Length: 119
Image (cartoon, rainbow, N blue to C red):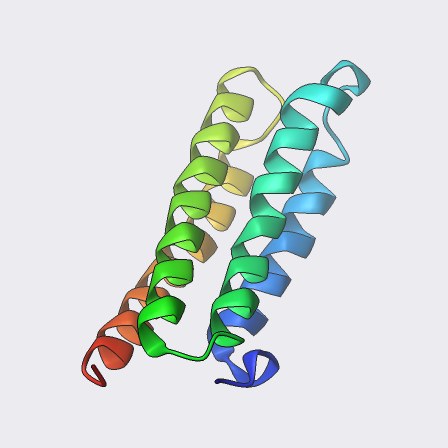
């Protein structure tokens, strides 16, 4: 079992979720139950799955939850691209968040490789 709060990956994911919430707060009210809700839920899923995986007893299980976090990262990025295309998000904001999401992917992949070497 790993202490998730000590993981740089989890800490970075928490920071990224906060940034995403700030961005979606500027979206039109008509998107409250559509894109805003979808993006926020998917972004919260990233650190949540990291934490859940860290709480599991076996590294193999942790790797599984990291792969779910990966899928959520791709989901969030796709929804943010759609948001930019709809004019809800500036290109520079999308680039900034995409860079954070890509950093999360790299960090997660690295952790997965380390965990896989243990089994």
